[in-house]
Picture 1: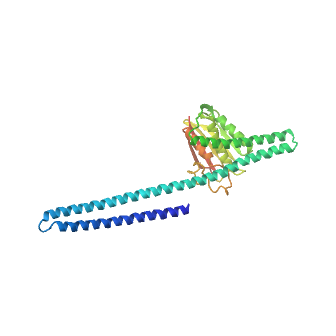
Picture 2: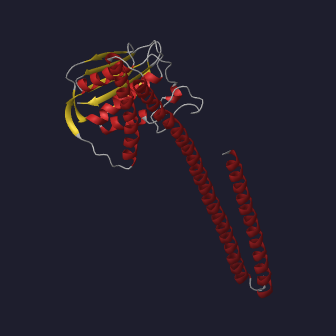
Length: 321
């Protein structure tokens, strides 16, 4: 990136210098043309014998000189503006391409890790079932773990597929009236089974909403998964859901380290994650919050992020009735 910036600036400086040089050369040529025309005028018209004609021709020469000056300055300024606009467009496009390439590279690294983790867990559980004679309770435990890991893998694949469908505008919403409270309870129960003694809920019953059940379930799962990644093992995550006079409010609060104010506007960008993928402690794809924001927008709602006191983050979703 620095090499390209240096070359870009050198080429731009060379083009501007060449443009200034040719502008000066044209101005000099203009002066020579005027002097030549003036010399011809002096040989053709006697200023003493015919002062009126001489002054008229002199006025024409001065007018032509002014026109040439304005023409050269106007054309030079136009070329300079076009060159500068082109340079800005090229630099901005290249910089955006580099940043997107880095984000996609981080995305591939993170997806590889995210895919391998549940696959490795399921493989280990299945190998344990294959090699050891276990009682029914232990077998059921291992099978439940496999199912949970497969659900996690399914959520990841759904996120990637849904992101692709959103980009291609291929996803069609399936609107229906359903109980969001039941959906939230099922989601919190599934995560509580994977992470015991880590979740608590405050869910008002019969919070009906008109929307896409699959999309809203994905949004809740993404926020819960995000909270798990950034919350210490001994801290709690709270999901609350309440109905107001104007809509439904859902809050997912964690007790982690929180999000810096400078990052709060960036976390909903596609692929955006803080730090380098190879050295980052928390893993993810950078799609969860992006998709959650898109889903909320599809339902004509809003999502906000703010600090949780004394520590942590609160994601608040507001959906209209």
